[in-house]
Image 1 (cartoon, rainbow, N blue to C red):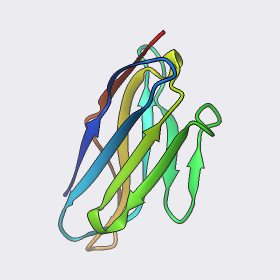
Image 2 (spheres, rainbow, N blue to C red):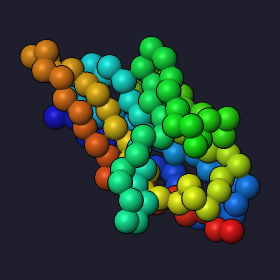
Image 3 (cartoon, helix red, strand yellow):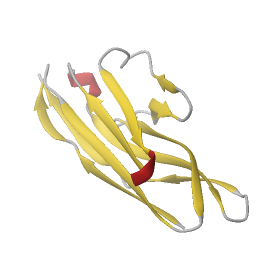
Length: 118
């Protein structure tokens, strides 16, 4: 079993910056990749950024958000800058892991609220 604990988020004015972090804990697993998704009220969950051997970003955040990872700490970070009101959402951490038996499983964090005021 893997647990994802997110931190960061909060309220910021448009144009401001925020950082999110997500730490994975547990035993008997290896991480293939980690990422961030977001879900705004009344909207579907959407990909924000992924990191494995490469990084991928949603077009809407390219040039403004940066995803990074500390493999030694099993932690993924999301640095968000030039925030816009449309970035307001619950941000969820995701980990694509392989357990000791070789089974590939995706885990989700509980989410952290990011609110950008205009």
